[in-house]
Each structure stands twice: as C-alpha cells, then as structure tokens.
Length: 114
Length: 114
Image (cartoon, each protein chain N blue to C red):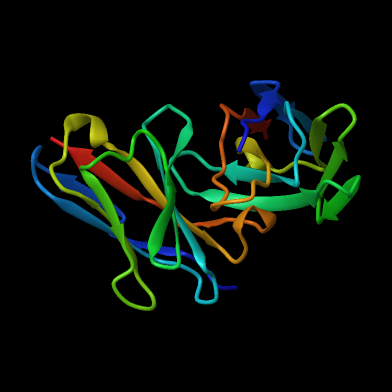
C-alpha cells in the first residue's frame, strides 16, 4: 500500500539555523498538508497546499515558515530561523480530494532545537 | 474544520474485552474520520464515515454516526495489546473554498492490559 514518507526521522539543530523537512506524498494525491505536535500536546494544522500554492495556513505558520513542491514528488517545509519553541514532531499528510477523502499521514520528523 | 471532543479521556481494559470511545461535534459535517496514534508516532487512519452513513466496519473496528445527535462512536472488539494508543476523531466540514484541514482534540488514551 502506498505510504507518505518523511525525511529525516530526527533532526537536531541550533537555534537560529534553517531546517528543511522533506516529505514524499502518495503519488496520485493532489492536496498536501503539514501538521505539528509539540510533545504532550494536540496535533495542530500548519498549512495546506494545492496546485503549487498555499490554500490555507494557521496562525502558527508565520513568515519563518515556507512550503514548496520543488518537483513532482517532494513536498518540503522550511523553517528559516528556528526557535526553541519549534521543537516538535512535524507530520506531512496528503489526500486526493480535499476534505472528502482520508488524509494519509507520514511517520513524522522529530525536530529538536537547542 | 471543527474539533471533535473524544470521551472518555482515558480508558483501560483487559485484553480481549471490547473498547468503546465516543466523539461529539458541533456543526454539520461531510464526513468524520477516526485516527490512531501510537506514542510518539504518526497518525494512522482507521475509518472515514460519511454523513449519509450510519455504520461502518473494518476488521475489528465498528464506527457509528448519529448526525441528529452530532456524535460518533468507535468500537474495538476483542482488544489486543497492540491496540494501546491514542484515538482521535476529526469531523470534516466542507466549505466552498480551500482544502480542508483536520482539527484534532486531545483524544482517548486506550490502554490494553495483558
């Protein structure tokens, strides 16, 4: 069964550094999402992406964040200058048809900002 | 999309017993999705039930939906140790524009006692 994959599984970075989290959505999916989960807290929506542009973003998704689909398979989340509070698990998800269909989640990237 | 409220917050049962958890939501939905999250791992989709469906089965899982009461339930029969996880519901509204994010609550923490 096709899966959403994410790399790396773990990333440790220094505060102020840039990080790029990578995702490969399921190949015939058209809608892509990033969520995050701070340890012990709820899973929170960050951004949704369709047709090479952001469809919706949350208040968390400020100017330090950006997303890109650089080619036909990858979907990336960039944090330009990481803060301690960016430490979290970041999940990528994809689906075929907006809210009408299941979102399939990747295994996550655990980001630790020191 | 709106957040579902799962109940109970925590549930401990003996292996082999059935586990039932409930979800309530506030406004009309297109569908409702159930997910499982093992500790520190990604979200695994379990079942999507549409607003015109009343019951759906998948293996040992049975989901019901009562749109008049704005509630859903997830039943896991013949529980196993591997079912130990947090379970989340995600009610999905359909708006005219944009992709549909999922909004997660705090979930039901299910512990299966061997």
